[in-house]
Length: 259
Ligand SMILES: C[S@@+](CC[C@H](N)C(=O)[O-])C[C@H]1O[C@@H](n2cnc3c(N)ncnc32)[C@H](O)[C@@H]1O
Image 1 (cartoon, rainbow, N blue to C red):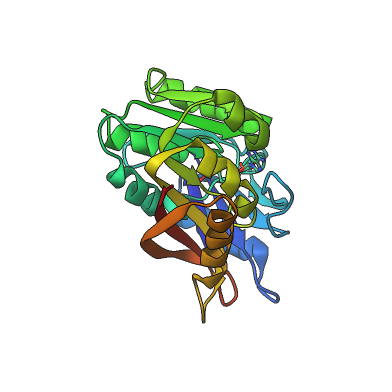
Image 2: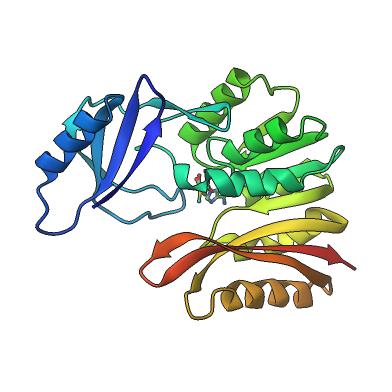
């Protein structure tokens, strides 16, 4: 059994992975007894799926209302884990990205969810010029609007509801940095990212790698896109982020692009 807690000291939801043979009621009671802020326990009943990267859950204890305000690194994120993608385990990775952003940068976060990456960046680097976010899940977009307001970042973060495929081009801007947090689909958007990036701009590209050869999938995808568009890439960093599934890891490749 493993679990995540999303929320704050007043109200939180526990998300539990229960193995065969384990007693889910006992596990839920134990979690709620130990963590008094946990008001609902959700059991994972499917993998993440579809474009919106949602999974199915079953409420095994507590309140049906699973909307919470999660707190990490001093900022707040309102969300319902049943309606949007969110992983509290990625908080450190958000900080890793935020730490790299320099004053005056214009940043694009594709696939931005409830805006945790944009908010982490704007909090860490208040002199960022502007962060643009594009998200396809209407619920996530609505939470993102509230989160940007709640963290007093409306002057820094611009949120767009829609598909990166169309919306990135419409912006007609060139970015210093583009974050691509869609491990299984980001490769289809690399041409758009290359197109929207300034000369020597940086891309943070997420993918999933086999534990024996973590980065080769991602590297192949980046190299193929660069070749197609006649661009040069320079790998800046390759990072193992979190386990994705048995023997596979979510990884991030940071690279710059020039003509
Ligand atoms: C892995 S989640 C990451 C969400 C967020 N960046 C985070 O770190 O919590 C990927 C997100 O991309 C969104 N998405 C998937 N395809 C998209 C597309 N073509 N255009 C915009 N958003 C998309 C999904 O709805 C989902 O919220």
